[in-house]
Image (cartoon, helix red, strand yellow):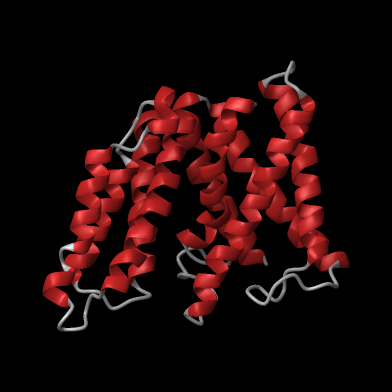
Length: 261
């Protein structure tokens, strides 16, 4: 626990100033995070090096495909998307016979690139749009996960899923309740004091649920590969993708719900 707290403090000391500064430093940091996520995903499979390179370039292409926060809902360039899909599929012709890169592998990587790439691009767009909104988006899964862990540890008795056996329904409910309660206060106090509270509550509740589903999705990947964490990059916390899980899912639904807030 001590190592977990220390590493979290160091991580926050590095990230918070860059988040506050925003702009190019923040965008570069997101690119580094994307690079680390590719490394962790590649470690799960024995892909040829050229496939790893294509995956990395494809992910970076999506992450930096759009910097216009006013076009957040339609930010992905179709030309970029077409090139990425072709770049991931064409190598099958050369590697399928050797069994080093199959059609299933290609579609797995396309899904990974789209999921992580879009999520990280939205990080850049939301931060460009507003620091307050970015912190709002960031804190929803963090607070939800924190209280889900506390609630589950204290009163959790009904196991929710075999994907993550230690998670309980009580933890999920407490996490969503506290995440919604605290972040509703945050939004109506620091972002929009004249907002429709019922709509804000509903939107945040949806995001807390989606965030917890994101955590389960990545847990399913880890369970499928019999690993506890994607890497040991962050002592006590696992890897980059272990920290991105619920954040990525929340960012994807956040840009959809933003127009209602």
